[in-house]
Image (tube, rainbow, N blue to C red; front, side, top):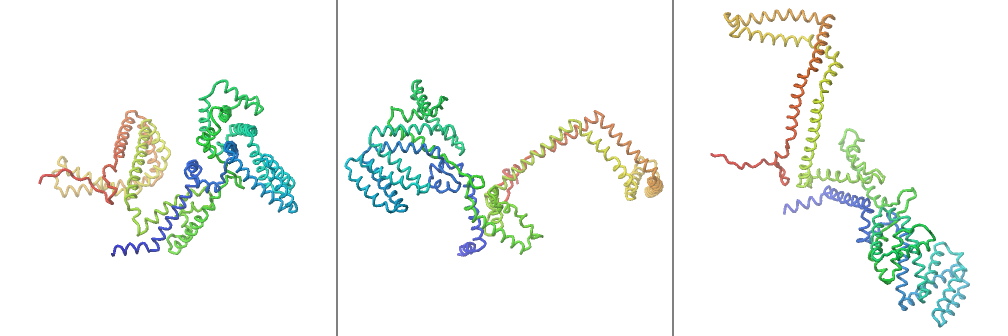
Length: 577
C-alpha cells in the first residue's frame, strides 16, 4: 500500500508531470520536423499506401499534380468514357445529367445578368424537348445553350467562362459518341492529342523537376517492353511516319513516343484492355509526378511554419521562464551567461527554417532534464549505461589509434635524421638565454651550499674508506679534519669564483665555455655512430610506449551492462588449503 501511495505521489508531483509533458511536446515537434524534412523522399510510398496523408500534406508544401502528366491522364479518361458510353443506357443517362447541369448553369447566368430573357430561354428549351428524334433533340438543345451563352459571355468572369466553354465541348463529345463514325473521329482526335502530349513529356521530362526521373525510366521500360514483343520493321516505320505527319516534322521521333503511339492503336487488343493495362502498370507513375510552386520570395513554397509556430512560441516562452528562474537562483556569475550554457536550446530558437533541424538537440536537453529528475532513472538505466560503456570503448580505441599514429610519425621523423638538426637549431636559437641562466645559477649562493655539501660528503667517504692512506688516523679526528679542510678550501674557492662571476671578464669566460660546449654538441650530433645509437635507443623507447598504448584496457575489465558496478573476473582456480 505504501508503495502504491509513493507511486501516486510521484505521478501527482508537478515537476514530474511537467517533465513528462515537455518530453511529449519535444517528441511531437521533432516528429513533425523529421516528417517535413523527409516528406518528399517518402512521398511515393505515402502516395501508394496512405493517399489521405498526401491529400492533406501536399498543400502545405505547395505540391500540385504536374499539368503535363495530368493532361495525359485526362486523355486516357476521355478514352475510358468513350469506351464506357458504348452502353446506350449509360450514354443517355450521362447526356441527361449533362443537359440538366448545363441548362441550370445557363439559367443561373441569365438570372444574374439578363433576367428578362429567362422566359424566352425556358420556352426554347421546352420546344426542343418536344422533338421526337433523340439526336435532333440533343443538337437543338445544345444550340439553345450555345446561343444564350454566346449572348452573355462578355458578362462572365474568366473562371466561369472557362468552365462553361469546357462543358460545351464535353456536351458536344457526348452527342458525337452516339454514332460509330463520330466515336472513331473523337478517338482519333484524342490519340493525336496524346501523341503530342507524350512528345512534350519526353522533351521536357517533368519527372526530373520533382527528382523522380526513376519513374520516367520505369514508364519507358514498361512501354518499350510491350513494344519489343510485337515490333518489326514495318510496324516501326508505320508509326514513325504517322508521328512525323501528325507533328509536321522531319526530325527523328523518339522511340518512347513511337511505342505509346503503337500501344494505343494496336489492333490486337481492345481499348478496354489497353486502358486496364495503363491503369495497372503506368497510371500510378504518372499520378505520382508533381509540380511544386514557388513562394513570393522566389523560394519553394512551404507553410510548415504555421504548423511549427505554436511549438516555437511554446519553447521560446519556456526558455525565457527558465532563464528568469536561473537569474533568481543566481546559478551563474552573470545573468547573460545562461544562453551560452544552454546553447543547444538557443540554436533551436532561431526563427529560420535552416535552423529548425537544431531542434534535434532538444533530445539532449530532455535527457539532461530527466537525468536530474529524482523521479526517473534516466542516466542510470541499463540502456544509458550500456551506451556510455560502449562510447567509452570507442573513445579509447580512437585515442589509442591517434596516439600510436603520432608515435609512429615521431619514429619516422627520428629515422630521417632531422631530429638532431632540430636539437642543434634549438640550441643555436636559445644560446644567449642559456648563457644568462647558467650565470644566474652559478651566482646563486644556495646552489654553492648544495655543491659544497656534496663535495664534502664525497671526500669524507673517500678518506674513510679502508684503502685510504688516512686509515691510521682515528675516525672522529679524521672526519673532523676532512670537513674543516674541505670547508676552508670550498669557502676560499667559492669567494674566488663568486668574485670572478660578478666581473664582466668572468661572465664572458662562462659564455665562451658555453659556446664551446654547444659547438661540441653540434659536432657530436654529426657523428654517424653516435647518431645511430641515439636513433636506435629513441625508436625502441617509442616502440615500447606504442605497445603499452596498444593494450586494450577495456578488455582487461569485464563489465556487465545490466549491473551498475564493474565486476572482477571470477577465480576459477581454488588453491589448496
